[in-house]
Amino acid sequence: MTHLFRIGMATGLALAATYAFAGGGDQSLVSPSQPHAIISTAQPPGPNYYRAKIVWLDGNYLSNLHRNAFWVKPGRHKIGFSAIINSSRGPAVMLSPAMSSPQNMPTLTLDLKQGYSYYFAAKIPKSHNPSQWKPVVIKTTKSH
Image (spheres, rainbow, N blue to C red):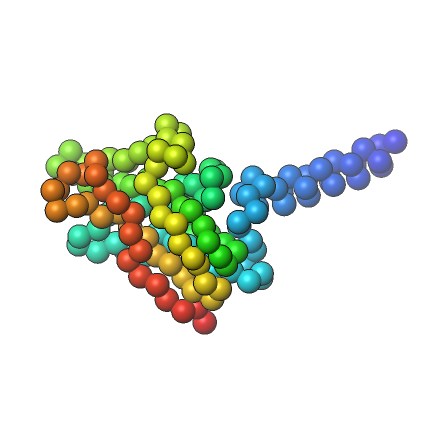
């Protein structure tokens, strides 16, 4: 009986790990060994851009907000962002993912190609109003 319990627990843990790796069941995320594109905010944004965070992918919340890059199936995807905007009072998170649904977040819908990496940042419009920031692709590279 104890042996069956251990097997059941091991199976449950393996399934939970698979579920967590896949982003809580999000079918858009894949492992690096599968065909993929990379979406990332790891690139330093530059003088006219601010740090963005990928928080939603195809309507699914990405629970690990400390990750800067995700392997995604090639194809059309809707990506939701939050931004960290530096001001005279210090950095501020614009649109906290816990308070925003995918419908209320700044998003980009892109056709991602296999073998390419896409880097994102937040851009403030010429009006200099940080609350009107938009996500932008700042760089696209062909992977090795």
